[in-house]
Length: 137
Ligand code: 5GP
Ligand code: ZN
Image (cartoon, rainbow, N blue to C red):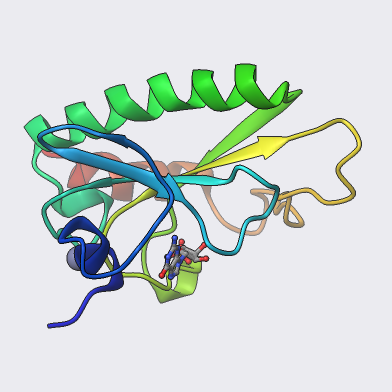
């Protein structure tokens, strides 16, 4: 199975590497929302947020926190978004799990806010019950 992010991990494809450790690789997104848009991935191939083992996810989250701080300070951002798209419906295009760190500025002419629904015609409790019953304890 071919995966562009695995190719970057293996050095078969180039990238502007920001950070690397035993479990994690971070590099600039080739098509940035804003300049400095950075991706953080587990080195091992896992498809999505749910499938990354806890130990590796801990390392990815720790690195994402560290790199977000570096992005914010070095680029003097006004804020940043941490985004993880999971599944085609959610906009995922590379099926090797990654966090996006997107630098944000007060002058940005875009936002990520869709039109919001209201609970009303459907029961909020019904949705809560479905999810609660599926949570593994
Ligand atoms: P997704 O759409 O899966 O949430 O995010 C995948 C991201 O990977 C996109 O923002 C896309 O620009 C980036 N990307 C795709 N191919 C490459 C590549 O070859 N190199 C780098 N650096 N980024 C890539
Ligand atoms: Zn991969």
